[in-house]
Length: 122
Image: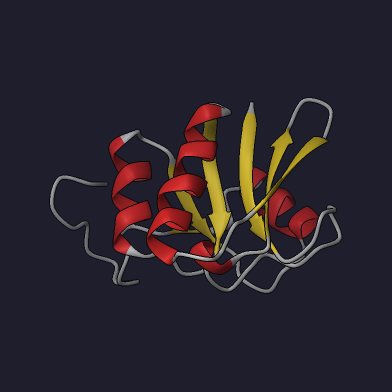
């Protein structure tokens, strides 16, 4: 099972980014062996960055994304593909993965941070 994590660094000790589209790296973590694929984020254009990062999450068949805030474009792409979005900005990647496995991370139900499920997304 692969999990995507928006980060400010390239390792499990790195911090989860405050904003998905502005992360420095997207880590694809294989939860079976904790191997990591590192993808550098091209932050030059936020719209293309959002689409590009969301596409990488889907390309690696990730079941979930751990991040900070997420804008509507990327949120909708991932929600439509049934990728679970978890909030864990500021924590280490390792800690966020541990909390996710214990079902202790907050699910991002709506891109605006509310608890309501917007539109057809859950």
